[in-house]
Length: 499
Ligand SMILES: Cc1cc2nc3c(=O)[nH]c(=O)nc-3n(C[C@H](O)[C@H](O)[C@H](O)COP(=O)(O)OP(=O)(O)OC[C@H]3O[C@@H](n4cnc5c(N)ncnc54)[C@H](O)[C@@H]3O)c2cc1C
Image 1 (tube, protein in one colour):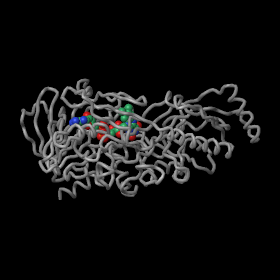
Image 2 (image 1 turned 30 degrees about the vertical axis):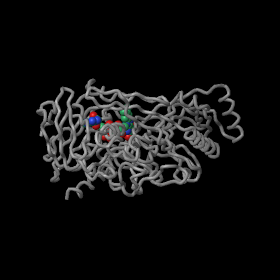
Image 3 (image 1 turned 180 degrees about the horizontal axis):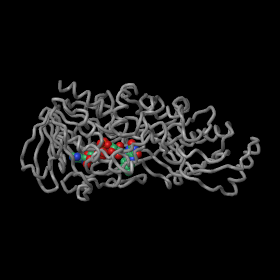
Image 4 (image 1 turned 180 degrees about the vertical axis):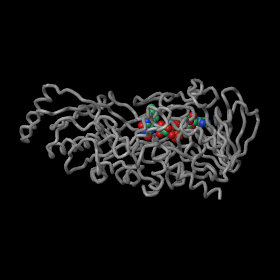
């Protein structure tokens, strides 16, 4: 069925699907695809159209405070396909340790182990079009060039794989809206409505049930949707905004009796050019510097702390990448000569590279989004993000770099210099992943999480949340593959709910 335009729906209409999905990003689209051809009548409400539109995008504007962050209307996209309209396609599954509760890491742990989402990785990988699910298994096959010898120690060679939309001549990453539009139109039990902004989640009198959704268009139409069940899939920032702004019955907002909604926000900190690595034996293999193809995968190498090293040294996730070829200053040259001389190595073919990294942050309740008194064109309160990064997070990464330097020397492979020292220095090269995590965190205990292990909002039997806002501990891995897998798991749960 063709997509429906909400601007054509008469004012005051009440629609009654079995399931409302709010948001047509990868989470919402995955859910619709996974529930295709079931008896569940779905209505997917998407704020934008099929292409970018400035007036809709402006609904995302907000404020940022604290550590410099990307403006809230630049770090996401508000039209069908959501963030995948300009994502990088970098993918890597969460590690086993990411799910563990660690005594040394406050607020850590998921309510289930990695095994719970493993059965969904293959389908998620297929949906994001990232080739065979190999990742670290790439090291066991034929690669175009040698792995960097790291010897024994806390760091190992790991791999990202990349989404590559095969219907697209440039093989850009899969943009879910464009890629799956035709498939979505063919789903008999789905209506997909564009230009439909959900502006309120309205509770039944007993506050244990979501009664209906308020929907508005920028052209001024207003109508309601009264579904049996609803999945909020508006992205890691907007999920919190909609819950917080729905404060007509419970002043703190829906699902926010314990003041958790919007807190524990995280992204991956990406300090660029933070260290210089020298490889004694010549050029590093090209797949460390850029993406390459092997074993059916489009991939790039990264250097990661092992899970054992992270447990032992109380470290968070860090995925180190080689950024660019650099020249060495006189001091650097002298250091290479001294070190290679002491090791009895010929370093005449040495090459130097700057390193970048994607860092996991410590969960922090004060890193959060909150409503402000400013309103958008639909009358919704705008958000303010309070961004933090702990000195400890930077210190933990320095420890990872120290270990990498130790391993390079011990294996006579190369050497490393850390180039950032003060906090200001680190912050001056800080970039962010545009990965919005944690604002509706998952926990079995309602006092510690907004949603339970099934992604159901605690205390509200018919409201669920999809996307990386439910990640209680974040990992350094990119979120989209993982949130798609988690959404497939949610689809299976919903099939049971509707049975
Ligand atoms: C520049 C950039 C690069 C990125 N690179 C990577 C990468 O390399 N790897 C990776 O894993 N991730 C990457 N990401 C993150 C990735 O895009 C997100 O993880 C992913 O899009 C989140 O999916 P989602 O469906 O939860 O939310 P979104 O993609 O944000 O989709 C939410 C959808 O909900 C709609 N919506 C919002 N509010 C409402 C409302 N009130 N009513 C109705 N609809 C609404 C929006 O229009 C949107 O379509 C990147 C993001 C950006 C911005």
